[in-house]
Length: 432
Image 1: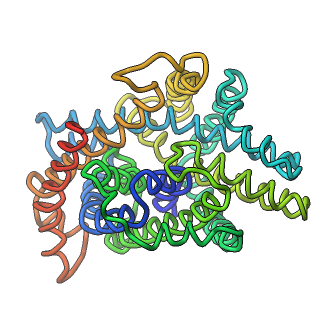
Image 2 (image 1 turned 180 degrees about the vertical axis):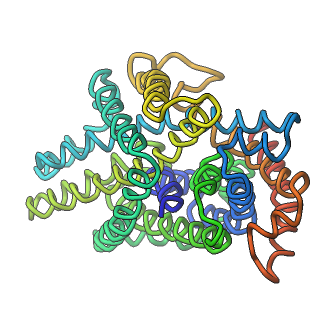
């Protein structure tokens, strides 16, 4: 459940729908599905095999399996990458905090559609509200991680994942009943390969990495806590399957509503936060109480999904500081909170006062997003597959995966197919 919680998060609810919108609908989804099965699952299993074999954090795992070699830099890379992601991810998590608070006061139930749909833009452009919500979100994550793996992360994930799934299914069913929602369904089901550019293909593969939290050490760190009696292949298939299902359900919850609201499908990161309040406003025109309840459930869903993934990113850094630097868990969490809060604050301000500050033509928020999802995650995933396929003993990989007759195929994917595909993705992102 903790691994599923790491995979199922804002990558599914917030990021997947707008990436589909920018990538041409179901043609993007087909590439995403194939990427998950042929590339992302082998990376997942590579990380998991390394983690459970050593029962160490990313840095410690490399030190144990390849002592005195440059592989230790992979360990450091996968400590830094999730913390960068967490910093800007916490900004979006903060948006969900604000929208949940608005829902609790029935602010989206007035029926004034124009005012409600303009709320997101005015909120993110102001400095103090988003900063306060970013702080609150990161604070929630630190409290859970301070409690530890079993009492904090595992307990939170075990209780919230089934509830999260039921909430998104409910929202999907409601979105499909909206007038004009059929266009959104067609958009998701009828592929338009003319819109599937090389950049869109690379983005679909990158989204698969992002959604499954690959290449940044979260899966390796969680696997280091997994008991030897557990089957990693079953865990990997279950996590990837739940992640795929959840992303598709989220797509069918959001895209029909996008078309019903008349919003551009490729609207970008604010798509969910602009679209769903429209639904609640429409609902509020006739049944304000139902609108209020549904909006509370939806933004609670986003918040829970965001927290479940954020705590996995924070745990990577905490595990490193506790195991390698002998920090107490509380001290490690506090140090990482401070660093992530500072970078996240700058990302938050890039929608307002720092909007004109650009790095390679991108705002700080967009730069961090593209740097991690298009480059650092892909590079980390490449190194994990190369390590599991070429540096780690084949017998050790076989012993950890316990795949039976399927091991030959999986090992072929880990050794050849996944690395080659990742190199193509990396070069495509680099030159496009």
